[in-house]
Amino acid sequence: MNPFTPAVIEHVEDVLVADPIAQRLRELGFVNGEPVSVVARGPVGADPLMIQIGFTRFALRRAEAHRVHVNPAS
Image (cartoon, rainbow, N blue to C red; front, side, top):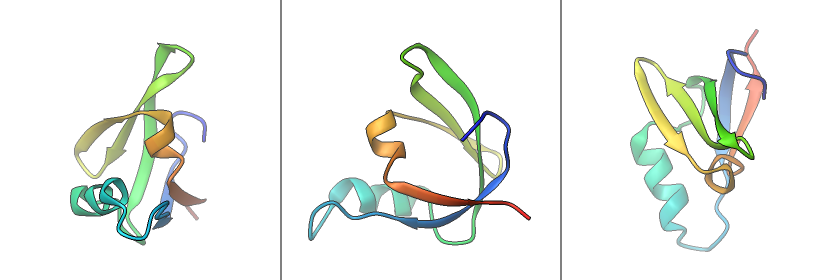
C-alpha cells in the first residue's frame, strides 16, 4: 500500500489459534470496515510503517502490518 492511499480494513489475520498480536491489533481499532492509510515508512527497509486510523497513528513493524488485510477505499 502506497503512503496516503486510503483503504478499508477487511480483516486481521490470525497466525495462531489464540494469536495475541492479532487480538491486540483488533483492540487498537484494526477492525473490519475501518478506514486506514499508511502515512510514513521507516528509512531502513521501509520498517516500521506509520499507520493512521481515524485521528490515531500507530507504528507497526512490517510483520505485524502484513496481518492486516485491506481493500482500496471507494
